[in-house]
Length: 464
Image (cartoon, rainbow, N blue to C red; front, side, top):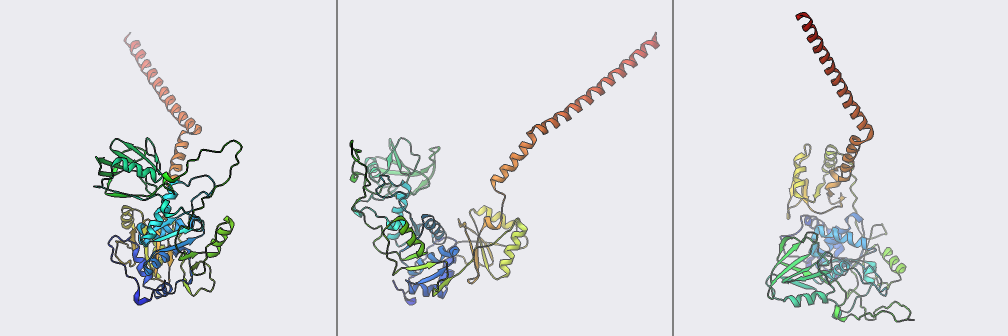
């Protein structure tokens, strides 16, 4: 879709944008990105460290859903995870492969089924979806036969029987105790379910047919952790359970064969919008003997220079600080180059603690909606960074700047001290030392007794 600069889509102001969304705005302010978005489908060279940021900026620029194809599942997962740092989890979806081939007789793991269903929902809302080459070439059951997404909220009145029936239809396994994704349990007026895309299981408490409360709980201790107002439960099976044929097994003398459903349809109703490393994507399709998708009218991004009309070039940060002093030197070097530096911390407390330790450079905390200037600390899950000198800023994860001794090294150090103290040699030295002290003490006591005895004898002789 061609979008002219004068007609550029403008999203409404959202107060809960991630703190790193300011980098998306900074990139969108570049005329080069505006021209590239207007020229899509086009070709561009993009350095791998800034690929997620470029994808996030393109998504915001065109203002519609985008399908990005990458060679492997790991590539798609990394791109989706990093893009969410800039535009938020709700705007990004991962569409991985099934994990098993059609016709293998195996069902894909529930978490992969849930991720694929969630990605389709994100795309329907106009989000950014990162998919692997294998995933886009694998078929899905028709829409009418797919398991439905279940949404629950406080105040809803689904009824406990209906709720259990919907979960079973969506492919969830009924068990006595919920411990893994794709399971649910019913106990009295409680329904426990572990969503396929969730980090924690949910406990849905009903009074009659009405949902009174929803709480996340620990699958290990079964104790409630926090209240949840509403939740989306994505399916654990690709087809509705009642539509699956019952497999009675092979009869005697019958040969096993791979059965591939004949009603599979492409996962997306249109061609991909962007492909990363198209040659590698085509190589995956050829190696896996999968149906190749046409890439003629697709935007091609590649890390290698191939005469592309657009280029977005950045570098990975090369920092070798081994302490606070060296870290300050590295940060000071970036600042002297005129770069705005954002250091990402997973927790605010760690950022504030590190801020107070700085002596030769000063940092400020970056809040959502603010524009980074100079050295700023941001609370963000970003684990990979880049240095984009052309745009004048750098993103650095805290672990790369302020190197800390890992927990495993601390444990090894403690174990080494414990081993040294408890070694046979150390024990022998300690025993010898204790023995020597005891021997000296005993000898001194004996000499004192002899002196006392001699004095007593001399006193008796003098008396006589």
